Image (cartoon, rainbow, N blue to C red):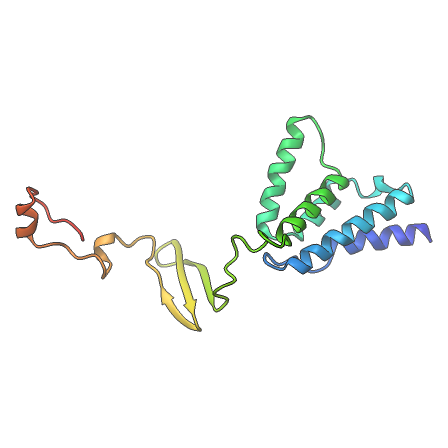
Amino acid sequence: MISWILQTWVKRVTTGPHVKANDKAQLQQFADDLICCRETLSAMEASHEINNQMTLLKIIERLPPFLQNRWKREVRSLRLKDQMPLFNDVVTFVMDAAAEMTDSVYGNLGWSQSHPEKHILWWWSPSLQMPTVQESVRGRPFRFCQAAEALFQLPVWRPQSEQMSTEQGMSHSRLW
């Protein structure tokens, strides 16, 4: 019975859907699950069963990329102190992240809540061998400039006349 409870909790926190980057409720639920798992395993005196790096990695992989990057910094900080990350460190990290995202005043900071119909899409352009950006506004695509385009090639940038540049004491055309 005890090993079944242990296996169930480990499976619950290591498998399942990835937490979406702006889903506060999903992150809070994940943090709550981690807390319950920690308390249950602690009561069973079985915390050692989840304190291995492969299991911790599976837990962290369920987090959104921006939290995975923050976790890497946290691990670096622990290792500089000659410590290995433990399950309790992961639980505290996820609890803190959930508290930040669900803060009633600052929780939405950095997330565009005023324009939910506006989405930025990044993709790799094989012809240019560099990333391209497209923005969708109200379902209609709007193309940003590609990284390879020079400013003078964009329609909003036009060279001034040679006469205006000369009058300003410059021998080359300027952009306005």
